[in-house]
Length: 176
Image (tube, rainbow, N blue to C red; front, side, top):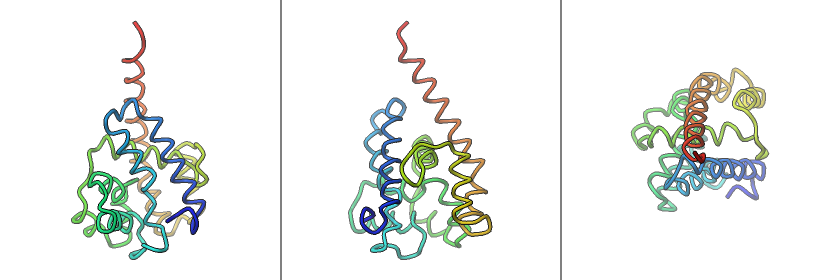
């Protein structure tokens, strides 16, 4: 649904899934769930399913209604990368909030990190570089530009939380 109409978006999604695999030590039994959410997080951009123009909502509705996807994957797609803030900019916050519950915070954080440390082409980047890239691509005064600037502190905080969890996991797995 993305590979042909939006190959760059598909490359990004594959890169996000690759980042999810790198977090397996902190994801445990949720690793496969996270990889599925990572590869599907931008499906709402597909021209064949875009209805509202807000890809987290369109993607989650499609996965729930057409694909009967796992409810947790659907919730992660609906709320990826602080989508509630963008939904607010679009006048869709109440719709998103009422239709889709938030998933566990540590999983939401992990998906934020996977998305916000992956370039549009699927490579690795830092969260400050990714935010800057998004603002420059969309413009600072657009819906997306305003949203990402508002979300920046939360994105950085999520990255810090995931980093601390990864460091703790590495310390726990080192031989004594």
